[in-house]
Length: 520
RNA sequence: GGCCCCUUCGUCUAGCGGUUAGGACACCGCCCUUUCACGGCGGCAGCACGGGUUCGAGUCCCGUAGGGGUCACCA
Image 1 (cartoon, rainbow, N blue to C red):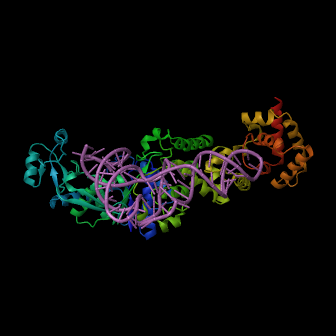
Image 2 (image 1 turned 90 degrees about the vertical axis):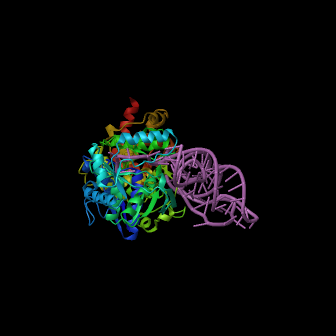
Image 3 (image 1 turned 30 degrees about the vertical axis):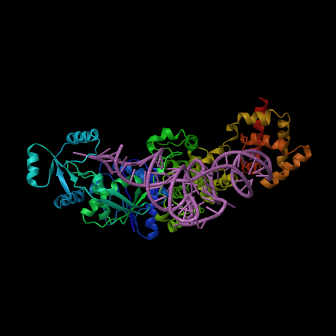
């Protein structure tokens, strides 16, 4: 089984495209076949390399490796359509020679006029082939008038095209409803549909798995393939990924609209907050949840993104939700792909991410999180030698509060020097200012810290409880004040773990500073 | 507008003639708890509509409605 994904170099990798690529990749991997990346740049003139790089980078990040294509090449290269022009021209010439295509000398204006007339009269436009040249004599005659030609398919005008589609079953289209599509421009360059069919054949693609917007294009491709004597590939037209809370196709262009959706906006804000706090420079044009770069930059796990995308339009049994690479390769099948579009749900994606993050081993989490701290200047680069232990403790204590790696910045207060700690206003008022005894309690408690041996969560807890018993107070009367004093926040992970990680001295420093602040 | 595709909780989906229509996310309660999360338990909520076929239809057929895709010398 040989499958392909054929991106055009646009400078970004769309999340819907990833889903299509994923299905292709899975098919190739499970069958032991090849996954081919072919670059559709027949229309692009400049900076292909530059516009392609983010796409390849996306694939690398997701771990979807390609067997043939840019960088790896392979036996059916080149893999850039811009370099395969001669193949297409030869195919066009063959189609003409065998009467499946013709040179057409009409002008765009003439055709447009005919189209309009037809529309006015309420009938569907059928080109009368007035300027069709089927032999050189006719061609010479038209050329004498100073006309130039394109090459058009001589499409059948009766009968029907029956497409066997792996997800849709049989799709029937009347040939008569098809136009004589152009396959070669006046300048000799060839168009996508010809190129695509020629390449799929030349590259021995066995399964054409693509988004459903290509379904209406399929009859003309079938015609080309059959006229050229090719064996047809298996077709599978996937439903597209729809916009959040909507049914229209997800598009990069409609970002402003999606931002009106609260869940989408929340994901976007989440990402922006991370970008801002880390001081990372992000590309505004691509930093949004429609494009994969976003997920890499804020610290999603590729496995989580893939797992979510897999279930967007495919299911195993309606129960199983968790798929790692191995199991998705093993269990994926086109027969269980849905027909209806599935809308992109930011919350569910985040839920998958949270899930995958929970089961990630500590070491890997530490590694993921470190670059964000360094970008934010909270940890030096290279990091101090005790960083693994310290970060390990924090990551462990934070647990599932770190949903994406960038969330580590929620705990920036663990890294800040005491004098840079900022107190949340509301929390400071509620927990330190308002309860009259808070300051005094903290002061007394701080003194007992000397006796906590060792300075670890368990013994700290014992110490604090003893303190409460001695003072005849409930733990709630001091612990909130203690949290605000040492972290500046109303909420965070376990208090005792927090204190342990900060260390005795730092805790005392922070308490002193909070008390000073309270005086002022 | 022509052609084509699609239609089960708000969302992702299971279901392939007989089910109390199942699961997940989200949401709402309760429990756990030093906060915030996590977790546990429970709840809300769906077969677009109308005709057939059948003893019996979410499931099969035909319409209707709605949604969407596509109609380039773009890919």
